[in-house]
Length: 184
Ligand code: HEM
Ligand code: HEM
Image 1 (cartoon, rainbow, N blue to C red):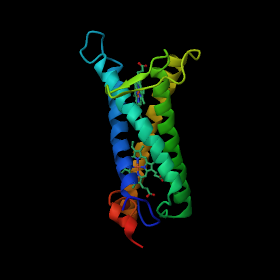
Image 2 (cartoon, helix red, strand yellow):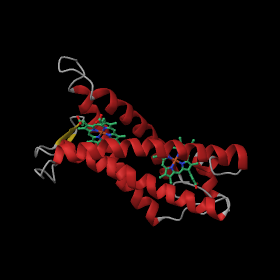
Image 3 (cartoon, rainbow, N blue to C red):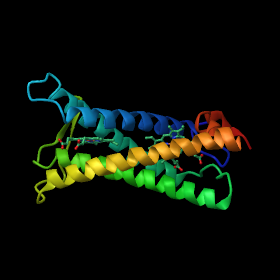
């Protein structure tokens, strides 16, 4: 039920997948909106604080997700060979882009050497700071990788729907129902 097996995703992977998807869409919208706020807007400091706090939590969750993904088996891929290869490359692309967006966001925020306050619960330390042009460079990477991540995720969601509606296999259902991981 908790762990992945060859027949389905366990609860940990399913929860991480959907919470991450929700957080990513929310962070993208929030990031886009907050960079246009004026100095006298009440959200000027609050919105980036939320963005960074959720972002740091997502960064930690994503590192754990990658470890969990690497140590356990994964459900068998469905579809013809070319589609399986495309899906595999697409998933690697999603993981790489997630990490690039998260790390670049972290690097923007720690460029001046200060840590990141996460909801007032703890401070994420500034491990890398004062690189030449750090904030500007990381900001550019952050924007383009976030955009690429959203575009790839839309393609990924359409592919998942194709599995369900056209191929009528269990690919989408097993990302929704952890009890499928118990089936033989
Ligand atoms: C998958 C997760 C994330 C997504 C999708 C995302 C998305 C975005 C977007 C779309 C922007 C607006 C960029 C622009 O208009 O130039 C932005 C800005 C920003 N993000 Fe993120 N972000 C994520 C994670 C993070 C994390 C983890 C942090 C820091 C810990 C962070 C810190 C920032 C900061 C400081 C800005 C403002 C940059 C500026 O003013 O140029 N983000 N983000
Ligand atoms: C920002 C949004 C999303 C991201 C970043 C994302 C990321 C991922 C990643 C990286 C995997 C690969 C899991 C692995 O092999 O370790 C995956 C699997 C999956 N995703 Fe998403 N996802 C997102 C949204 C969605 C949406 C909206 C849907 C459905 C409409 C969806 C359906 C699925 C399904 C069905 C699988 C399992 C594929 C399989 O069992 O072979 N995802 N997702």
